[in-house]
Structure formats: structure tokens, C-alpha cells
Length: 358
Image (tube, rainbow, N blue to C red; front, side, top):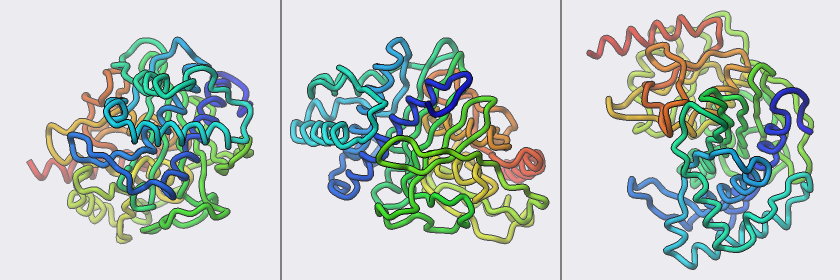
């Protein structure tokens, strides 16, 4: 098992499932990255999304058949595109056969292409405050994935609206926690040694990192946010996409905090993982418009991991992120993640800068 104590079995299954799915996405990048679809919102969707979601939901259904799942993708595009469906099916079968990990049994959910489609559609739960619900983003940061840069396979277990377990598969982050966080870190996706990590946390048990492997889970080590005596010394992360976070507001906040280093722009929950292990310090995601609503699968795992690593995560008004209201964070606006000792100072400046815009 990956650990002992509460939620040990859930963590073990989540780690193995995310590792297997992350390896599938790496293989997809090298062989199929140019095969994309477009959603209605024009964001690219890769076959890796479907394959990763199928593998992870199959594992969850086998281990925890009564749990609900909130996932980003649905199988409609696969049902309408036979060639794409067959491509994803072949990748899923190859992932099952090539996985040297014998601890994770997928069982019957992926017995046929049609069963795979039904499995993908098991992610249609509407979420909520009651019961056990998994939040899954099979590829967070699709544009980063297509660039060969940062992306994440994200899985979190919520129980009665509170995140209890979180796992991030980060194939393009360095294994070393000590490697400085700079623009372009982990670019040029390869299978070279020293790249790829699984970062995880269980509520009340701290956060851990381990190397991404093709076999059994690697040994973990504990991670902590870096002590930060002066906020002016901080390295802060923000989204690459201007549509996801107001970068001009971030620049004003950094200046007000005395931060002179340029921000590090990264896709996906790799930002949460990077600050949790001390490679960076702050993560700001600032509202770009009043009606923008975040999805729970984009934040659930990272939120828990940062808090368990010694950080605080709130929205721009200082409220904890509320994962019990359905598929979105409709009660929250933006994200401010920082070491616990300086979060209040950072939040105060965020509020001041944003209030000056009104």
C-alpha cells in the first residue's frame, strides 16, 4: 500500500490509476498529439483526455463501485467518430497490457469499446455536499500538453463536500524538488530520466512526492512549502492563458508586494504542485470577468496538496474554496495560494489592488 491510516486504500488506487493514465498521455503526445477535436468552447481536446478518463474511472469503479465521479469529458465525440473511438480503444488496451503494475485491476469496465464509452460517461455526477465523490480532470492544461509543456492528470476524493485525497500526475516537472522554477521548466516533453512526478496528499497526513514510474509506485518523500521570510523574495506562478487569469492585475499585485522577479507562467495544476514542494511560493489566479466560474476538477487536488504542505488556499475574498456546490466553484472568485505565514499579507494586497479597479 502507498500509506497507512485513513484513506490509505483510496490513495493507493488513486496513485496507481493516475500513474497509469499519465503514462498513457505521454504516449499519446509522442504518437497522436496532433489529433485534436474542438469542444463548443473551442478549447482543444485530445484523445489523451478520453483514454486517461477511461482508465481512471474504470479503476475507481472497480475499487469503489458506489462512489460518484465528476469528470470533465463525455463520450459523445467518440460515439460519433468511429476512427477516433478505435484509436482511443487501442491506446487503452495498450496501456493495460504494458503497465507493469499488477496491483491495480481494471476488471470488467473496459471489456469492449462500447463498455469504454459507458465508463467515460460515468463521470456525469452533478457533485454536491453529500457522500463520496471523485473529481477528475484527465488532462488539465490541454494547450500545455499540445505544446509539450506543463499539464497534469488530476484526481481528488471529496467526502461530504470536503477534499480528503488529492493526486496530481505531472509528467513534465523535474523529479527534484530543488530545481528552480523558471519559465519553460519541463518543456520539450521526453521520457528522459529525472522527469515526471506524482504529488499527493491525504487530509491531516501531509503531502508527498514520488517519481513517476512504469512499474510499482516509487517510494515517496514528504514535501513542504518553502519558508518565506519576506514576500518580496517570492516566486509566483500564474496561468499561461490570459483568459484564465488577469495577468495585469497579477503584475500590480507583485509590484505592491515588492516582488521584482517576473512571474512564472505555467499551465495546469502544476502550479499547485510546484509551490507545494517549494519550487515556487505563490499562485495567483485572478478573475478575468464577473461571470467566470471555476470547475472543481481544476482545483480540488491542488487545493488539498498545498494546504497539507503548509499553505493556505482561498479565493480573492479570503473564503475557502467550496467543493460541495456541484461541478463548479460558484461561491468563489479566483485563487490565492501562499505559505500559511504570509497568506494574510498577500491576500490583503490582492484585495486592495482589485478594489482600486472598482
